[in-house]
Structure formats: C-alpha cells, structure tokens
Length: 372
Ligand code: PLP
Image: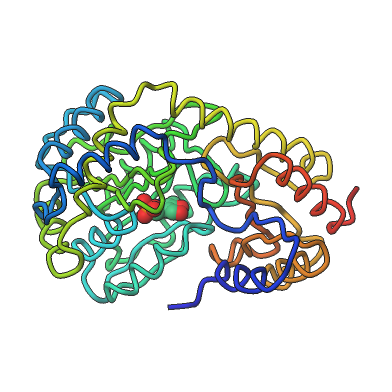
C-alpha cells in the first residue's frame, strides 16, 4: 500500500506557519449541539458497554426508516450494519465480497482507500477513468474494456471525492444494469449524499431488484461527525451477515455513545443539514468565482466538499505542484495523483476552510498558476 500523498503534504505543512489548509476533507463546522448532548446523556444512562456487532437494534431501525422516508426504499433493519465510520463498512464489504486474486473496478480519480482496501483483501484494484471532458462521469464502454473473468465488484462513488461529480439517474441505472449483466456486485459509496448543490442524488439501490448493491453511507460528513466514527452498510442478506461477522475480529462494534448520538442526529429537523449544505454551496460558488475565470476548474462540483483544480499547463507531477504551491504560496492541497493516475497535473481543494481563507487560497492558486 502506498503512503497517502495527502499525509505527506500535511506533514510538510505542519512545519510551516501561515498556511491555508485545503488538503483534508474534514468538515470545519461543529457537530450540532443536540448530537453532543445525546451522547453525553447516553453515557450517563449506561450506554458504555459493547453493543451487538451489527449495532443497536434501535439505530438499525432508525437508519432503515430514514432510507424508506427519504428514498422510498424498503429496507429491513437486518440489512443495516452499523460500523465505526463508513470506512469500516467499505472495508468489511470488500473483505466479504472479494476473494484473493479477484479484480475490483475502482474510480480514477477516486478515494485512495478503495485501492488499499482491495489490496488488503488480496484483490487487484483496476482503475476506471473519470475524465473532465465527460464531466467526470464513467463511460460504460470504457468499463467494458476493463472487464475480465476475474472481475467481481464495481465501486461507485456519487457525489464523488475528489471531483464533486454527481452521477445522473441514467448513469446510475446504467452502471447497476451493467453490473447485473456481468454478475458483479456494486459497492456504492454515498457518504456525500446530503451535500448536493445541483441535481438530485440517486441511490444505486433504486435499481437493484436482485440484491447485488451494497450501499455505504455515514454520519461523518452529513452531521460534521468525522471524529465520532459512525457509518453503515445496507447490504443483501448474505453480505450483511458477513459484514456483521467481520466486525467481531476487527472492531467488535461501533462505540455505544456514538450510536446513541447518531439516533439523535436522525431526529434533527432538516434545517440543520440544509444550513450546512448552503454553507458549502456558498463555498463552491466562491471558489468557482475565482478559479473558473482563470480556466482552472473545468467542471464545477455538483456535490461533495471538494474542487478539483487543473494545473496541467504547469506539468503532470501533482506531488511537485502541491509541494511548490505550499512552499511558494503557503496553500496546502491534496496532490491529484493520490486519487489515481487520472489526477496527474491536478490538485484537490477541500471546501472545509472558512470563506475568507478559501477565497485567499484560491487567489493564491491563480497567482501560482500564472493564468490571471
Ligand atoms: N468515502 C469517501 C468517498 C470519503 O471521502 C470518506 C472520507 O473522507 C469516507 C468514505 C470515510 O468516511 P468515514 O469518516 O465515515 O469513515
């Protein structure tokens, strides 16, 4: 497994002063107070012990209820496995589905952890390209060329990290249909589902009549709860059973007070998340207002928390670009290649800094790019 290029920049940045930090996708907004209070109360009430591997029955039922209300997807609580962060749901799903030597189609650019999870399972990650020319959407014909008899799983991420692309309904339908045609599982990472600025999020499970889609989502991004560690998988019964069993040797279960906090999060009025979404929407517009006129943002993000900046005119080596930008302009960003080869010559900005810092960071990037 390769070391994350993002960590490298973080370490370099930590030895400097006056740095604008746009490298990590960690919401800067606070966890809403009712969630914090619910965790406190839960701990005082004795939620301080192990829970079942798959999570508290009350939370699994609440998540199933949310999926029914929001997306009209009938979900039994048994299909829901609560995990410490979406990352654990993704990793255990990969372990449950992929045998050593099997191949997994992963987005490029895409979240680097997909590749390392597949490697951990002894599988082989096979990147499929998402190109700016097609709005960072997958090309079904391109996927077909990567298919082999060993292909087992297709990983999909919408809204996407690092590009901010939102897959339209037709694309999601096609991808799941294509997976069914070739008897593949689909792992659909929807952790940014609540941060959509244009269009609508379409869950992959909507097109899954025969139980091949595993959906992963969580609380980290939606409720600004990255440090609390809570996510979940919604899976076909045979996969849900293995994902739940895999928690036993790895983590036992998610933390009990965190699970109670998540129940409180699901009871919050919609305005709480709407407020956060509006804040991020404003930041997308702010960043786009500076980067687009300079020709540095080929596709405006429709969702998630990132802007994927194109600096290819300065060279392909995004690690060098990120280091030079940091050294010359004191702006820390994530090198595009840490998300795959398609990230060459690009940098990912996280829209998780306050507006003034983000604006100044974007202005410095334009100065660095020499296109102003
Ligand atoms: N999936 C994607 C695409 C992410 O970007 C991240 C975190 O950055 C995660 C999953 C992990 O989320 P969690 O904090 O719930 O483990």
